[in-house]
Length: 68
Image 1 (spheres, rainbow, N blue to C red):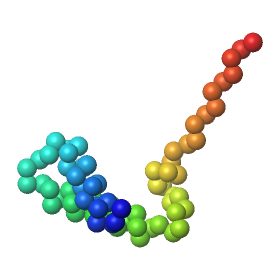
Image 2 (image 1 turned 60 degrees about the vertical axis):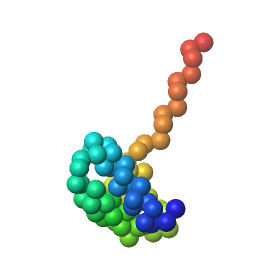
Image 3 (image 1 turned 120 degrees about the horizontal axis):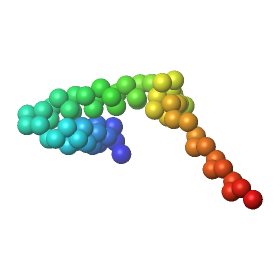
Image 4 (image 1 turned 180 degrees about the vertical axis):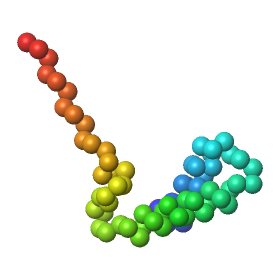
């Protein structure tokens, strides 16, 4: 997926989630562009960035074993 496709897809998802407000498509496109550009500029080989969603999510805890 190209950068432009990611931007358009994200903008559409945000616009739909907001209830598809009339006349706001360009605003969501700009927000998505800023977000994708920020992620692209900070991406250094796929490492997790401090404060990113990936770095803030803890791995799942193992399920406790059944008592015998």
